[in-house]
Amino acid sequence: IFFRVLVVFTMDKVLPGWFSEISSFWPGQAISLEVEEMLFEGRSDFQDIKVFKSKAWGTVFTLDGAIQVCDKDEFSYHENIAHIPLFSHPEPKQVLIIGGGDGGAMREVLKHESVQKCTLCDVDKMVPEISRKYFPKLSCAFDDPRADVIIGDGFKHLEDKNDCYDVIIVDSSDPDGPASTLFGEEFFSRCKRALHADGILVTQAENMWIHLDLISEMKEF
Image 1: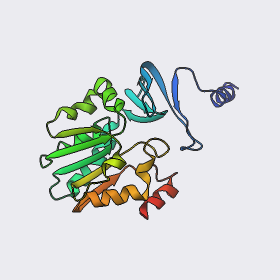
Image 2: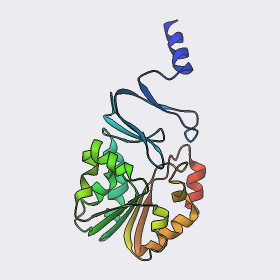
Image 3: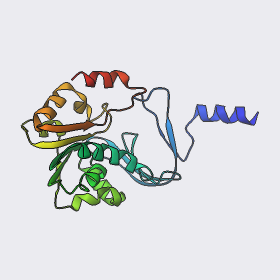
Image 4: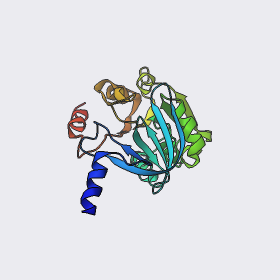
């Protein structure tokens, strides 16, 4: 009887003191983390922003209710999105990151001695500001002399770029917000023009289990 009552309770309401990521972009599921302390709540020109200390996953960064970064496991994402393309290139010197305003991907990129310049273009100025304050281990590369942080639209940034970069990393949020243009055919055409002939592009491409339609469409670009 106790088990049955508990299941009904958790199905009927979100538990107080927990953050729950519930979105139509993730149909049929939710991710919930117990909150120990809310560190920041606000809204930028583009999106809702929250930072909180969780019980199990360290400090957590959310945009429009979607989890972007957790202290405990962020390395597993940032190391893969940065090191795989850079180690695949014979000598990466010029790197562009679209999005990635938390700084994690830039931190990993600048571990490569061959990199002469890493440009990061994020549309929302509050993201690097919040990261500097609450995620110093993520944002530490912002002060590297090879780092160039631009606040602007990544889609527009590429408009006049030709044969400029060895590696482009698209570290975007989900396509149902300010990053929507970063999932279209014109964006990838601009990336191709901006890359050198032997350049490499890597992009955050959602979840292969529930976003196969989106991934299949992007593969055709």
